[in-house]
Length: 216
Image (cartoon, rainbow, N blue to C red; front, top):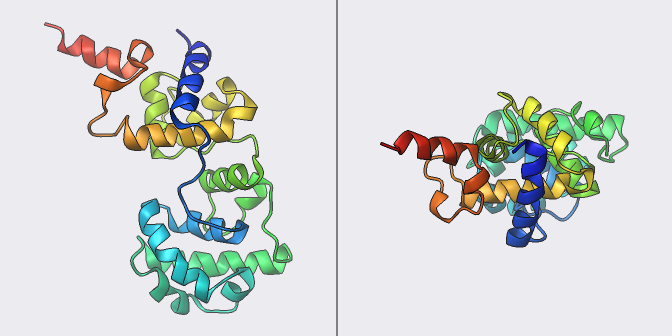
């Protein structure tokens, strides 16, 4: 079964399992989501959500963040991974948004990538969550699950993104991103996937290989 055929079986099951799904990061506007996404790099959403309330109280928008030095931001994100570099990137990002985009976050994923701290994955997350752009962000969960199921074979997130975009209908890309994240985070885990209760074992490349290797 090829990836296009598999996705026709996988998407309905994921939709039934998770329904409406969006980012687990807490935010109220484009500014807050952008900050949360930058902070979430190599850090858990839970930790980010514990950190951002005080951050947003002190720095409520791009304007206020752009006016300070990174040293003033650092204490508010000290519990986040790589706080030194992230404090610098956040201030640089805010200044660029204020100086080059009139304080408004760009909506185009390619333009978003020109902002400090925003890579391709982050840009796709922001644009799909905020504006339902037909893009899919490939994080570690999406990368792992897609390759295990046989939806993609690429060895880089960019290649996997290209393969998924080719087989997932555009209207489903944003939702599929969150479904695959949830499935990878809570079911198809990196170290111990729950294969015994997985609905996709019959079409999963990973499961089939594992089963074959254990056959006497």
